[in-house]
Length: 252
Ligand SMILES: Nc1ncnc2c1ncn2[C@@H]1O[C@H](COP(=O)(O)OP(=O)(O)OP(=O)(O)O)[C@@H](O)[C@H]1O
Image 1 (cartoon, rainbow, N blue to C red):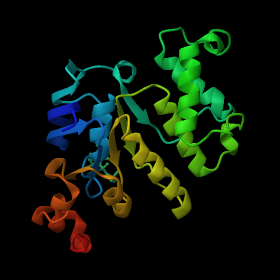
Image 2 (cartoon, rainbow, N blue to C red; image 1 turned 90 degrees about the vertical axis):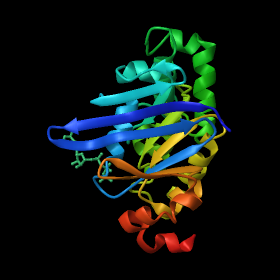
Image 3 (spheres, helix red, strand yellow; image 1 turned 60 degrees about the horizontal axis):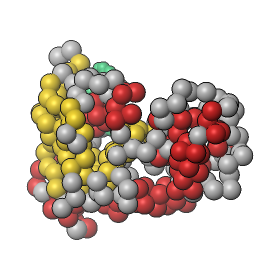
Image 4 (cartoon, protein in one colour; image 1 turned 90 degrees about the horizontal axis):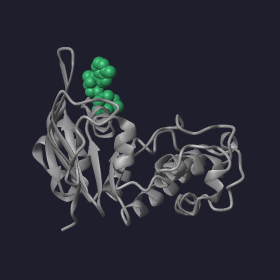
């Protein structure tokens, strides 16, 4: 069985009187793609924000390996090995693909952040930059300015920028949102390849993609986990069918 990379225990988040996430326990293991699904407002994005550090939990504990990261800020979690792809917000639109990925690689290195000079000379930054560009399928596109990339390529660039930080775990919040079918196929293949080196958590509404990608599935409703396990078991779980999947489970 793969080792546990990230473990959340009885995680909770309140917004005033609303319990957006309540007593959620989840394990994300290296070598696995773990999908979190559930109806709108179930708490999926809040959970990702709690894991990445954008939100601090009201209760519970998060461990990365043996390290307690429950109250670490996002930059410290990133350095500890949590990589999160943000939709376009982290891309510098006027910089090239290579410059964007190099900056991400550099942010993870111990060297001070410098746009020119040191980064070019640092072989580790260069290696991680080239490796991330290649893994994200952007080899040959290094000198393209980011804002002229297609929507799908910009998503690839966001993922490249995460990979450049050498994360233990990759968090993806709706990576297929706004994609055409052809572009989605490419991103699905890219996400599938990530399990070779990382633990992956994906929140996604596209059920066909979820069932194609997920090694493990957690279903949330009203802030709570209503089922978790192997996709073939979860999809026939009565509470899941009642709450969310409806007739989709019949395809099992
Ligand atoms: N910053 C916030 N302040 C107050 N309430 C919030 C905040 N963020 C989320 N919520 C509420 O918490 C609940 C869970 O929201 P969340 O966005 O995590 O759900 P979700 O499962 O990701 O939904 P969707 O699939 O629509 O993205 C919702 O009722 C939402 O309105």
